[in-house]
Amino acid sequence: MPEALTPLFSKAPWWWSRPATRWLLISTLLAVAGLYGLPEWTDNPLLHERSPGPLLEQARLRGKLVVGVREYSRPSMPGAPVRREPDSVDAALAQALGRYLKVPVEMLGLASDEREAALRERQVDVLITGATEPAARTAVPVPASAVHGRGALIALRTLALPEPEALSGHSVCLAEGSPYHLPISKRGGLVRNHPSSLQAATAFMAGECDVLAEDLRLVEWLLQQPDWRFYRQLPFEVRQETGGYVQLPDTEPQTVTWLAAALRDWQRQGLQDQALGQRISDFGLDMLKLENGLVCH
Image 1: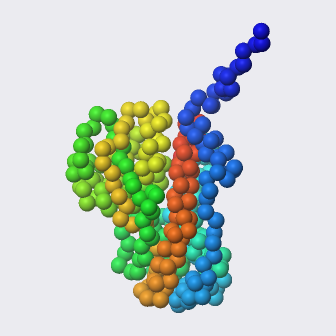
Image 2: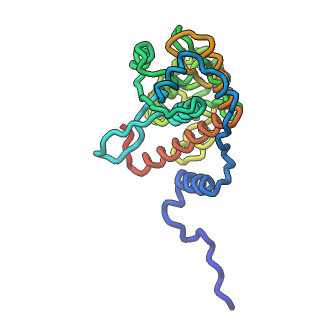
Image 3: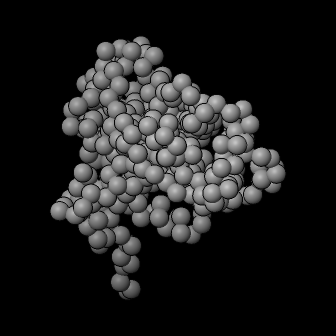
């Protein structure tokens, strides 16, 4: 009688039992195999034929577009130098603007208290700020994502918040520039900004806030992880009002018109959703690093 076959994962390695690790491995394999069907860059000749206006024409003549972006630390080995990286969505948008202008891009990572001065003093040509309320100078809105426009809220299972208005007076952890900042503030939530989604999530788990607000897809993934079994998704959503802003140093109609057209094209091609999906993948990878003892400075 032939020996019974052994199931494929009956003797799986220890890391396979961890949902975060499985998710990371599977998503990586799918990406490598090309099964996501991620959009490829399609040149838009209309944007090249149309003048970008005098503010961005200066970048063309210089041969380089300088873009101010959000920047924050990601997990690194204990004792290793702090590794700061540009926000992945800001970086993707910055590179897209450079391709539209047909010039290379230099990204300047800026702390929140450095951004206005960098724009005012012309250290950058444009400033990408996420959905933080812009200053009075020209700010061109980034269209809200149709795929990632829905946000969800997480709270301890013992916290009863049956409706959006119940947020009033409760602290909410958010990533800086989160598109859910404004709708939560309108409902009376006390926003607590953190440099990144990862730092907002870890602050929430440390008890610094009553609620965590994030992309619905990221929330659904979090609630599948063992460490999040004491939390639940609240029974209402928040919706993006904008996907963020790109700020210019001055009001100049032709530049504003060209930049708005570029942002619409970036969304139309599916590149905005691709960048937002990559941010969720990065979050999962960083959470896995934290679980395995790496440090987020």
